[in-house]
Length: 280
Image: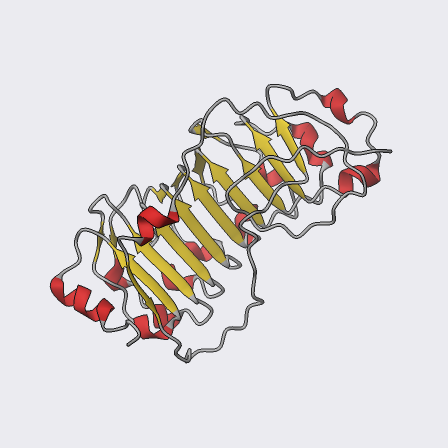
């Protein structure tokens, strides 16, 4: 049976998948909304940047994760063209071969899509600022990408315990009281996104390797309450906002390889501390 996959560009999500031998055409996502380009150049030009090799005192006992920033899903489905009949000729093997999926313009994920039991990477786009439900139907989900969505985590869904990569673009995450509910999180990247309240136990992310909040949009965060020396796996951290909602700088900043901090509340002393980390 021939399988055609419709590929659509997205920004970032980890994908470790087995490609189908031959693609099968399902549907073409109609993308009438232009997604703004999230320019690293704009952000990075403003940020105090340091790259410093230093030993980490604590040992990282977590398996490392690499992110493909040009990742594309095996299968893309649009709510505008979605019909269950699209999959009536698919064999069980075809369905199980799908490990990466992009759903466009869905808020509630149709129950029929639980046929894709091996999905590890899920992208929810386009930008429509709707809430989403149904993520829990994918029992192997590890990587989640949100585009213009609202995600309510008040009930701490079970998939949080498995998530390893979380990427949010123009999205709002509500109800997350503790980072401890994501013990396997290795990479977190927010672009023009935010938690309603930033959880106070950032150091509990013991497997976190890559952390970026770029143009953080909501909720005040006192960075001086964060001790990076307690995070043995962390190699890259960026804290950035234009909204006057960040303050201070983290402690333990000499324990990680790359640190970027920029916000409107930095004092002269804090700027001097950051600049002292710059290579000669």
